[in-house]
Image 1 (tube, rainbow, N blue to C red):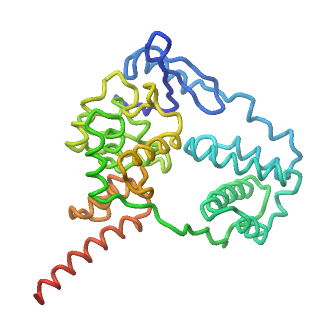
Image 2 (image 1 turned 90 degrees about the vertical axis):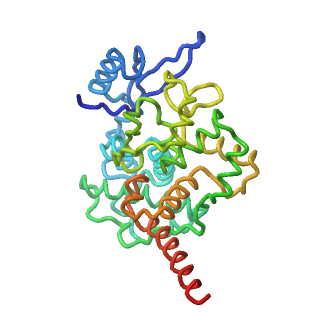
Image 3 (image 1 turned 45 degrees about the vertical axis):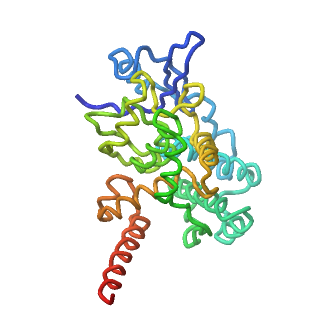
Length: 341
């Protein structure tokens, strides 16, 4: 039987306390789904919604703008497959916000007149390196779309250096982990959230979507939102113990205080950051740092770069290579000190 990858599923508890599910996809009509995830009626309705969904008219409007303008290109990009289907929901929200501002400021101008120097000037005007990186990604995608559909002959972002972040995300130490575990016992939402990050090595947006419907024979089956990479992650014994406290009819493992799935990864990250404060951890500790800690622990256990990537799903192996190099350096340094002692 072919496994259907569940996407665009939301849930809520009604006034009687019953958990209800519905199909909700950006730009498409909402469809109620009967029964429980995995049941015949649920999966039948889900597959029907997935196959028959048609876009609403809110995004079909490129013809309202004069052909060849920035506004025309932005509208076309929002209706394109690469934006509509290939991007994670959080990426789409950020990219839309950036390009809507770009359209408001330059909408009447011809898209073909944008030059490399203009891109560099706009990057320099951003409020921070992080904002500049996001702006660069949005503009580059828009320009690549414009070239593909014939609105431009070239991509003015070609050769522009991608902005570099000044600092790195902090990697949790084993002491940080012990301190958090001492504060939040098994059965708490915070301990569950930490275990998902630490023992799966996944991003916040993927962890909040995990539920019992993802688990087959103690293996978590998932597809990364950011990269689209399919992953099979065997469950760590500690994660299995913690997940045993989660009800089987709960749609996602991690929920809000009201028992609902987190709608956005940012809301989850902000909540988790507050839990770190309760544990007395450094302000540098954040949920994404658990992904780095997972890679570090695997490297310390002797796993090579490819083995670690099989868990974390990293496309680029450069970051993982830093962990393995650091572990190898420490091991060799200990050998050297022992040799002269």
